Length: 249
Image (cartoon, rainbow, N blue to C red; front, side, top):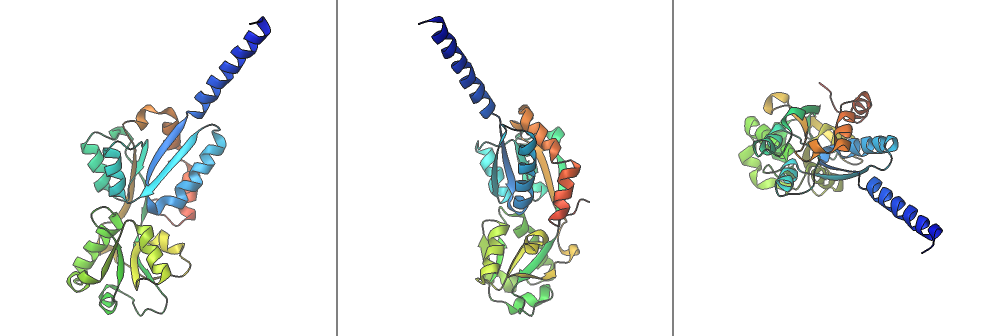
């Protein structure tokens, strides 16, 4: 092998190694489904300033995501739609406790076709099919269940509930007219094309919707995940949250 050929091969090897190292920068996100548009936009903004960093997004019900993380699914940052599922991972030492913070807040509403004569919790007994996130894994479903219990309509509605895998599936059913209405977050309903907010669930009927976030144990060792985590707390992130109707305090 001549000197020039050897140098060419060496340069190619170095470039290949460099390329592989650059493409190896990856951030895995596990995020509550109701934050999809917000996090998509923030991921694009971060990636534009940090070339070579790949952001992999996984959206779903908070409980489903927490169980996935527990079972070894790759995740650097977890954003839940309630404290319960973040605490679930905390007790299993799967999140970095020092990184736990509040990302944003939301509100529970009931959405459906505008012609539905429903203006409050007591009116729900007039409906035949109501979509609700499965309370076992979807915080919106937990909030809705508590609200129905406190409003005294839970027993009447028990057999009329259509369980879904996350809050976005609830909205989809309402949009398609497959149910008479659905319990969703205010920010989801604001993006609906067919379904309208029929009423806001009174806050005294359920705990305030909070989105806690944390680096996972693996994420705490990923400098790129740490950088994105800081970005989630920046003024840019707050502007995007406000844009989609989330509350900051």
